Length: 390
Image (cartoon, rainbow, N blue to C red; front, side, top):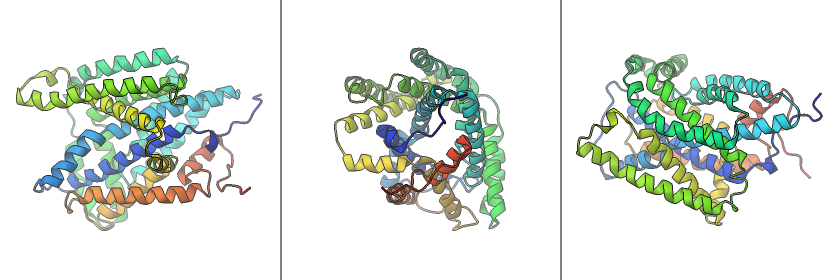
């Protein structure tokens, strides 16, 4: 029999920089998710005059946030997977059984989230989390090598995968009357079917996104196994090296994209470097934030990120529920009717409000509400939500 009962990692033992990075990633998630509503809702999508502000926001989103947030969260998921597996195994329990149950409950939470947001990614974390169980005994060096191999192979696979025919977008467009409906259940049906057509049966998403997730999971897993984030101050030189290398890669690829279009190179037909660009940019952002943090810069900013990052799951679902009632027909029905800046201003306002709410909540409670429910289901035991006053 196991000598010790399994418990979640105590809040005081969490790695601060990891929660801070989750908080930063959540900013990109809410911004890019809400921007999606600018283009969804009309078939064909409505177009707006691209003024200077719109161009700035679009390029900022594309360079800084687009796909960088979910890849960052995927890397941190791999980190969390490694922490959890070790914690369970060290106490004499079966980590495969425990994590399988945990991912099955995440599927349930993902289904609830899909009712409010057709772009849900929780289901993908749950599915790929189960896949990661095939590698839970892997050493950090093979895990890192596996990620590097995927990094160079995926661009060669992408052109073939994107050629696979799919009617997902066509069927998604046919669902738009449900989106504009004033009926709550029509809106839910739109989100569930939209998730199915746009993601679950779309080859570009089904294969590429999950392979990229696996790559990022492996990076996070390897980082935890060598205690990279736990010993960030000792790894200061390595962090700087990663930053400068990825910054150079980011700049070269940023130049390469418009240049290849202008020169009409057919390079992308055979080797699509979109996801390497995304991953390099994501790692550049992570290393930059780590450099600032380890040097003691922007302390108030990082404390805010840490607060919202500790409640990532709760805040993510709340963001989606708000968007459901703001953009869908059952709520304010704003859809894609607002100027482009609105799809930045609204999520940014929500994000700032969530920072203050997260600080208030965590001063009184041990976990975010959804995190607390998920932990209780995973550990099959009651866990105290309210903090005990000394």
